[in-house]
Length: 125
Image (cartoon, rainbow, N blue to C red; front, side):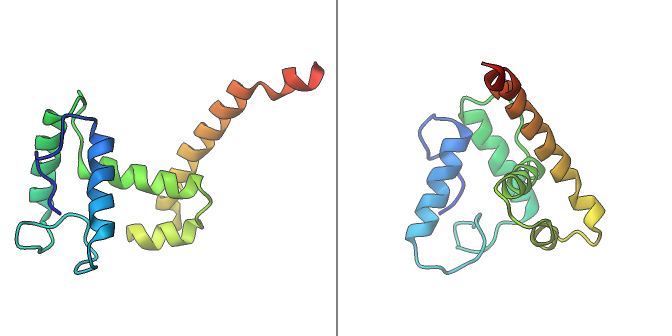
């Protein structure tokens, strides 16, 4: 399945979920998410261009980059409890301190969730 403008004008997230769903239903011919029309892995520039095209077709007003997808995936893995050393290896970081950036983002999400829950006010009630 290629990343192309063939998806309905829904959100970028929805389109990527459709892509991953379609890939999951196909026999595993490639470990790569983004493949070209010849079913070969797309190069970095091709992925950038396809993401740009798709984000322009979608309702998203933001410019979407491969780095944003990488950052989001790493943050979500850490927020869901995946060991930081696994995320480090997945991202190819030589130093764990580089990967720790994602734990700070996760800490911010945790802090925001706690503030929203207002646990102390609920304990006093």
